[in-house]
Length: 416
Image (cartoon, rainbow, N blue to C red):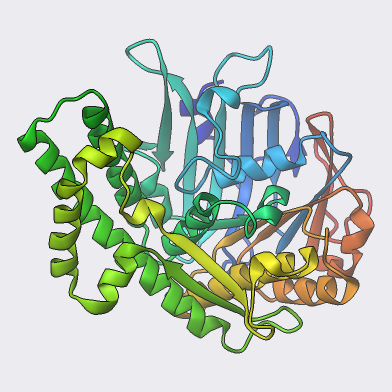
């Protein structure tokens, strides 16, 4: 089944099926104020041959052993937002082994404006390669950035436990995802800047010193680069205000966007900063030809985080404190989106219980239950999330197949 058919599917009657779609009838939405994925269809995605999953709860808990496919389902949901998903995977890494060689994700999303059908997946292109296809309400759209106008998604995964002790790239991408929630076009600007940066680097590396061509690329980099830096500075300022009270018992984070371009914007207008950036790029052509890339620009920005109460860099904190800081930042951003935009983001928490003590887990449950958007959680030990009670809908994942959890308290039953 291809993306075109999956993306236009009707919602199923049951809550989960691992088989191709039968004919189904519509059922009215409930909890209309909650942003949620009410139906998720996967085809040849990772270890999942086919899945139809229907959800209504505030919190969806996917439990099962390691390697069962829980994170794969979260990754599928993450593909409903701009970018390359929570694993930053190549398109060709996603299809199921021994499958058709392509993959598809389709969802019905409930949001304040109503219902939207989203479909995305890999499809062959005219040159015999692969490309990402995105459809919204059955209409093909260009690129993934458009998805940000319909749905915002943020996530925490186990690899992010090292976010504060590794290089700035992952932190910068984490900051950009916080920007997407308030500025859906930021994703398109990031892509345009990166594309111009790559083209300039290739010209310099190949010794093609065409001044006009390089000048045009540097003008593009300067225009988009200053816009990126300005959006990041605004996001950090907004987040700093939202973090002032903290999220007890989660620590308050002090956040800073650090980079040359951001410092220029502290001292001059955006127009003057753009002129300075363009001049810096032109002056650095010989050096950049030797080193590759560009020595200056928002692609080198770092998202610095500190434990405010301890006045300590996040990277120097304990593993548990680092996890708590990440949770605090994501929850603060979600609150800000809800308060200012009247639209909260979906949250995806992969093995969130790791490094959180019982007090913080219970506090997290209360916060998630009271959000106006859905949260998806994975766990190897389902009992850790018993405190969610009837607010949670549980599914068991094993070997790429999904079944309804036997301890569901919301009465959802499997219908074929």
